[in-house]
Length: 555
Image (cartoon, rainbow, N blue to C red; front, top):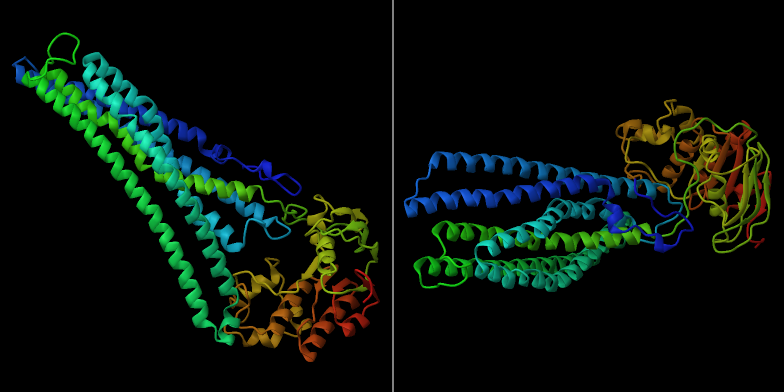
């Protein structure tokens, strides 16, 4: 798997396009070799055809059967090589795309904060549709480039051997194609980069609008949102058409030069065979066999260049994707501690200590000690770092400096997963997996969640759902009120009787009855001996704790 820079690494460590291609490089190189070998068989086939047709024109004794057998045999070998080349190229593309996609998913899953690269829409677009643009580049461009480096030179050498005039035509017309390809390619690359950026922006916009769908409907802003999204989609459509215009323009120009080159060879060979031209060969007049051979070679001289031109747009798109991958891989964020997998619970008392911790942003945190079984409220003004402290205790974020001790041991990559096995987490904003409510509550831990639902005072709510515990709520908990969703997250936090419960603003924005129900559920866990740490602005909830720790000074 390709290494990605982690927290604290410099942006100069961003991965290059060559590194992203590493998983499929061997297959890609072998595909290029087979493609070149397949193309190099055509001169031999062309020689057989020219020998047979020329012999018929001159009355020479030619065996059509043997010529046909040789042509068919070479054609079969060429077909096998071509199929093998395409198969290897597809394998290379699958390996590259799969490795890049897996790396993006695994790295994003370990981020402790939002990526500077962009929102969820931009990252999901990069990991899905944008990576798919690499497939055409890997399967077409690399093989075409390999053929361009070998096949035209071989055909040029054969042309020099038989006719310096035909070789001169190749020498003059051939380089014009790469020159114009480079000129058009600069515009294609810029257009592709704009299109790729617009895809990410459009996806971010869609994610934001979907997450705020309820608010949009309540505010009656449907028309305004639709008009804005339509304008954005129209801009994306224009950028896509700009890319297609460049692609069609480049193909037209390059096909024109290739056609002119073949036509010039045909004119020269035709007039030479008619006796109107007596120059261009090395002494002897041009024979029908040589003329036919050169005519058959001419299209194949330009074919690799035409294939490369056709794949040039694929390269421009791939370069834009590689640029975004490099930007993404160079984005610096803190990483979660641990591996994120299941682990046996960490042995020791359910205590927490923070020593000399500095929060992101530079704020220095006073030392904090929470004993096993204690109930503690973290209070302070908004933005002082209460949520950050909870995330540090859970191993979801590391302090800039200082040390977090849990169960008498330092919280690091080796202890984070065992420590989290003892934690129940209640976030401030309810969030659910796109799975059944039962799976959201148990997270695959088999135990019946009925008791947790009862303690969270949400049993009747679940019973009223269309399919009970088998109901799918969606990521935003569709069908539940804010208070009901909050109590569901409480049930999830206390399911399995964790030793430590971390709750972030558990009663915020709730009516008095719902807040009281949530408070009772939390206190019931403390009564059975769990360590309870809540970040809150609720003075009533804080008053029920053993003590209050002020973050950022008492307001």
